Image (cartoon, rainbow, N blue to C red; front, side, top):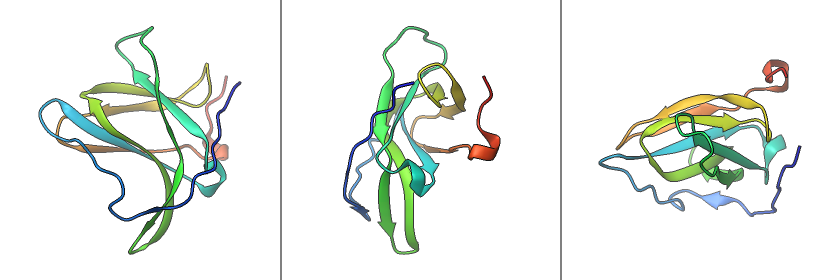
Length: 114
């Protein structure tokens, strides 16, 4: 299992631009602090073999506090697999044009079983 990790500083409110509209949506994967810097991959569930898209989990500072998430700002509408690791899916999520979809990363207590 290969996980890429990066050291990024916190992201302030308004620092991520989302390209929404038509057939383009966005995805936010909410995680815990323990995944800070880890890259999470997603891929179209209906298009096996296409390259995966990845985004790093970053600390997001907003008015209500701090949270951790990976943001995918401009995804074509469709059903996506969120990958736990190279071979195991953490779940699926539907991205709709003009909408921000949200996915909550499973906790260790509910992690996918091989």
